[in-house]
Every structure is written in structure tokens, then in C-alpha cells.
Image (cartoon, rainbow, N blue to C red; front, side):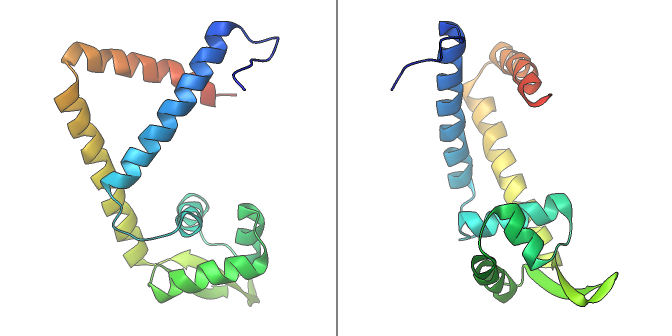
Length: 149
């Protein structure tokens, strides 16, 4: 299963494998650095989508998350129960409800992000020299080009 596509060079294929593996491990470590929310990946994904896109209908969230409306209803029920989202009438169509973040959700998200960022900053401070951190910053600038299309 370590085959590479014929049109991809060996160094590119190796870099892709190692980057994917590293990102998976880093994501896991960041999650462990602040795993106090007890949210499922689906619940976290919905909150992230609401942060990025703003309020949305349950149907729009289900479509965006590629889940059945019943699954989204269950996810939203937990988030409502925990006080992280609220439903309110759509100002453009009073028959429809929009789901939006509460102040409690915004505070929890900010605290979680800060905890993960502090963990990462401490790990970089304790585990790398100034020159190595400069190299990391250079590598990040190169990797950022992956996202520009």
C-alpha cells in the first residue's frame, strides 16, 4: 500500500506520507492538550461550522456536514442541552429557525483554542532552539502554499 502514483516523484510521495502522518499526530496531541469539552467530533464540527459560517438552519447544517437531518437533530439537541447553541427565528423567513452559537459556546471555544495554543507554544519553547523555531516558521510558510489554489 506504499505505492505512489506514477506521475508523483518519490520525494513528493514521501513528503506527502510524512506530512499526513505528522498532521494526524499533531491533531491528536492538540486534542489531548484540551480535551475538557467532552464533545464528539460531530458536535465539534457543527460548532466549528457555526463559528466559520454563522447561524444556519438545521437542514443547511445537515447538508454541509453530509449527515441525515435526523442525525443533525440529535447533534443539535445535545448542543442545545449543553447551552452551546440556540434556535431563533430567521429574520428573513419567520417560519424557519436558525441555529446560532451562545455566549457560553463562544467562551468555551476561545478557552479551548487558547489552551491548545499555549500547549503548542510551550512545546515549541521547551523542545526547540530559536534557530529550529525559525526553521519551523520557514517550513510553515512553504506549507501554507498547499492551501492557496
